[in-house]
Amino acid sequence: MSTTISRNAHWGILLLAILAITPGLINFTAFEMLSPTIANDLGVTRAESNWVTLLGNAAVAFGFLAAVGMCRQTSLRQLTLAALGMLILASLCAAVAPNLTLLIASHALQGFATGLLSSALVLLLLEQGSPVRLPVTLTVLGTALFGAITLGPLVGGLVEHGSAWRALMAGDMVVALLAFVVAWAVVPAQPALTRSLDISILTLLLGALGLALVFHAVGQLSWYAWTRPQVQVPAVLGVAILLAVLAAEWGRWGVLGRSSLIGAATISCVAGFAFAGLLAITVDFLLRVRDLGAQDAGLLTWPAPAAALLGMAIVGLVCTRRRVILAVGVCGVLLLALAAWLLTHVSAFTGNPEVLRIAVLLGLGTSLSIGPLLCLTAYAVPGEALGRAVALVAVLPYVMMAAAGQVLMYAAGVRQTAHYGNLLWEQGVSTYIGAAGTLPQASTGAQGATSSTTAMLNSALVLGINDVAAAMVLIIVVGAAVALLLLRIGVRQFSFPR
Image (cartoon, rainbow, N blue to C red; front, side, top):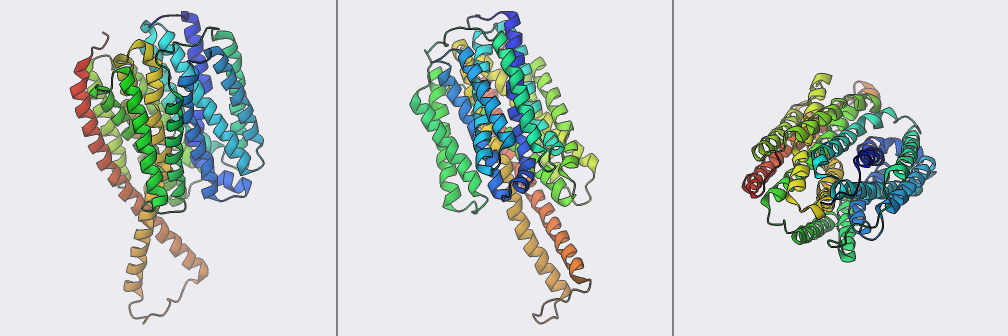
């Protein structure tokens, strides 16, 4: 790995990466909470407002891929400044968007610019920075990544009233302006990176197609059951295309046979899906069952970012030896499984302490599970492909996280419907068995009947959340077992720095 940037420039670019990337990642989970608010503000349905989040996340993932190719065609300074200018404009348009169409377009442009900046700055730091600073660089980047993603619900809760979400977009613009000033000062003017491992146009097109199909399938869950071909066909095709693209790229690096890297990617996908999905149904539980406002629900998730920061700091400090990285991965997935297990026992009477414990386990477990992937990638991939590898292996975990919230909330809704039917049947049999098919008489009036229906719906939702969480315990354990087996086999294939 050739060193072409000075120490001062390295830390300046690291600061720039934090400024440029974290607002977009905060939006990733914040918009999950803001969908109802945006729907009310713009006069659209909740299902329609969900497309803001889905297409924004798809654009981020495509930005990861596009930047890898663009960095080989133009200088990183030009690409960084152009992406920041795009981010400033998109944030401004999102802040003043009068309708859903403009908001979707603006937020997608924000996502694309965030993806471009993520890959471009990672490429610069890892491929042209000093190997001595690699552990610290990975630790700081990972800490900013997980801290931003887990901070989203808290931020979303703070700006959920009326049109206050527009202030979040305005804040993104201010941070992007500051990042532009920093970029102008610290990003060196230099030619494009080596093209020896250039990404092809076909790869970019296939990657875009795969991402579009996956997020289209997730969006269709608002209208179709998961068993319908409108959901299954694009989901299967999209995942297959993405896996084929990444397999082809890994093959070009000569590391496809490294089972350690495959294992780390597997465990990262499982952990990312578990974290985002379990966090989404936890927030949904607080909003709908506990009947908290979005602000109060968001405040209850504050331990997640704190725990994520702690977890990534631990990863940076200890993941430099082959045996330790296995222990860290095991601890991470066990914590996520424990969080899912706690969610199998939530009820309408679950208090704040239990929710805070779940938030801690989610934040800490995710960083301890996904963090080792960064370390393994850094030590397994040739230096000239390092930044590109980190950018590309981040695509699948990000896609899994972006889709998880919608998927698990849909699953909880399906189970809620089934349990609600059972509760209605049980109530009808036990209370109105002698009614000879006549409708029950509401002795407490319309308000009492509505209250009874709401209580049953909430009870059914709690049971649905319990079911989904139980399924996630099994998915986490099985996925982690496969991944850890690959890690144990492959971790001997290369040495770690002492």
